[in-house]
Length: 171
Image (cartoon, rainbow, N blue to C red):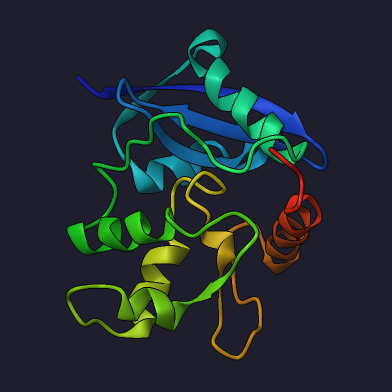
């Protein structure tokens, strides 16, 4: 039998986000338009069940983030079945990058115990299944350029600007 992912949507202009969780936590964030094929490229052979009540804490925290009222997420995240141990270790470091700040791909690479190439680190970050909650939008190129993002570089810039605009709030 296939593993079950529970999902719901939350509309926060200009997007409608698709969130999916396991019994252990958030496993995927994408856009509604893209929902089926991208999640299955990350997690094949899964069954999706729509369950807004189960997803309510996740959608609420995402709304609070976009409203500038939440600077960190405290819902469980489950990427235990995502990628390789190396990719998961990269995302664990990315998850610690503070709200409103940026670090380079090279900074992430140098903070890893096992020396890997910046390219391998950038690839792991690009595959992040839990956008925003694991803030890969805060990782930029060493030259200060924004770099790529699964939802596009314009969206990455929007998220960075959103955080900077709320950075000095007392949230």
